[in-house]
Length: 460
Ligand code: SAH
Ligand code: SF4
Ligand code: F3S
Image (cartoon, rainbow, N blue to C red):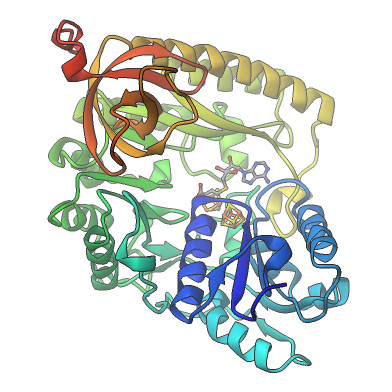
């Protein structure tokens, strides 16, 4: 183990957890800590997720790995944060000697202070598990050296009020609490000053932003306009919206804001109206298709991706066929699909007609085979078109003897590999390219100046 002020963070789960971990790391760095490999860290944080299967086992095996890597050293301070911490609470203390801090979704805001105190008081254990009434503003945590990279993630809310029948989020992240719009804009400005060119607004149900007592009467569409107007911002994205909460202003924003990328992750979950009703999604397949149509009208080049659950209690083969049909009709460019699993506290735990694992697994494979076809067709459809990449860093793909590979994303968020001059760092640059080839989940491209002929072949 190295000095007292070293830390290591292990992150599971969604983009919000990734951002929480980034914030916590930066807040520790602002206190003089530095990042270290697991074996050498004095403070180890496991930031956890409980949205799908076996989250508890995942956390316990991470804690086991930590014990091994640190030789069970009692001076190592292990902290469990996030959704599983919220769920299991102080019972985690009994499960693992090294754990001395458990902090839930709202409690994480005070984790940096708690870490400092726990290092001073080796006998102490602390829990930060209370939900707050309002969004907890966290201390600003600047990027190290004032340089934060081209992509920034900014929380706009916490929690969810929807209580979809399968979902644990309202229990682990609490009720929906919108963040003050001024604080959001300030954080966006800081990120832009630190070098960000793309901002992703984060929340469990972003387009319900402002519709709770914690907001300041700014709607989601207004917020989008305000963020898009910030000088220096090239690209704006958000995750995750709920289909039911997409307002006409949210749809119009795709026509009005050139910064808003033509890509929307819109979780559909299922295609059958009966299943959607039991899931308590509050839309049916017709409403979903109308929404897709309205989005395409506002932004003809928009690409949609989605989340899907198969094997929800009571799902028949016909219900599942409806999902396949809807996926085909909507032509999703990609999707995340999961077998339903019981989550403690969620209503569907009590539903009869649980689907046997083999049947759910078989449906998942059939769904994923369809999605692979759609994804491949969509990616190949991009070849020959021109676009702009925001370069994120070096690519593992090289062009031997010719130049170095760099990786960026197109406006659709697809990873694209491109050969660029070797001599400088291209991170954060916007590079015009023509797409030349599709891989399974990514694209290859050529810098435009190098291919003047191809550059004439614009997308229709
Ligand atoms: N609105 C949230 C949803 C979080 S959960 C967000 O995306 O930020 C992410 C996805 O996990 C859901 O869209 C759903 O498809 C899947 N999921 C949630 N609970 C699940 C469960 N009990 N079983 C299987 N999949 C689930
Ligand atoms: Fe997992 Fe949901 Fe918590 Fe994110 S909010 S970490 S997806 S349970
Ligand atoms: Fe979960 Fe539904 Fe909210 S999926 S996060 S309860 S919108």
